[in-house]
Length: 246
Length: 180
Image (spheres, one colour):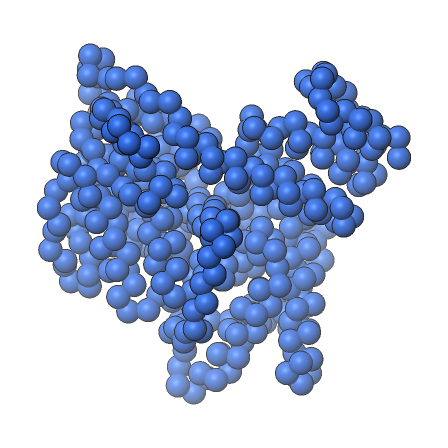
């Protein structure tokens, strides 16, 4: 679908949307979020002491540490869902090159602490790089200080799997209730976020079924052929074949 | 067009982006249905994630859609976790200040605001995010597609369905209220 295919909204709905006031943060919101960001940045060895709040509640030093050009910043970020802990690291450097738009960006890790013996994920030094167009001063990398990147964190993997399952489940239930558009949305969302995820096989089999339901038999056959090539032993092959025989 | 001057990130660091974009991140989160203390948590998470992913930001592009894409993921992930934990947060409705709310038009503006917010509730999360970005924030579909990580046709499809659902919801609410 392209923009010209879109029917315009009714005039009264357009008026409503135009005249609906924008929600604005209540007083103190910006300062409260900033304080928490500051706490996140300071909650690690090497973090600087909290700065005083400036006028309007803005902490200049904290904001600077968030990523002003030329001020290297490092953040140890335990990934989402892990007790919300954030640690700040040290030994930061600008990135060698901009990373492509990917779900989990490559990080230039210049220091990695020894992982703790507990199940808590080891902190990984992350840095606040410059945007790709900004000039990047060169700093020699000290290979001897670089330790191997730890294995992907299990909780992160589990969270990703949970997200994958959620999308696959949305697609499956949408197919069951013949909501093909919703199913395709969830499938494409999964393909975009998890191109090589753990549930690719399930996604691809659902994709064939969704394309059949959408009446795109050519696309369904093409995907089915690719599915057979990629997963010749799949238990989902009968379902894929059955969808094409509809 | 986008409401307010959206920085392109070329000449800005996160400190300027935080100051300039926090109100927009707030209103986006609010229009996705986030309220009260959750808003503070999620706004914090958005900027922490932005810091982590700063090296994925293409500084030739407007920063606001990029932040909204992060905000959408943060909201979806938070709700999935909450569902998984069977945690139900029931917070009282709040009366937050809204832009342009003057003494004379306060009631009318409040009714319009509540109508929009209630109608938005009827949209599924992805369609709601696309609808809010396109219709309320004025972000072009191509930039929304990039921010959401979906193909442009999917974005238009979500927008089309979102428009239909939003319009139908407004009609239902108006009927219930006895409005014309």
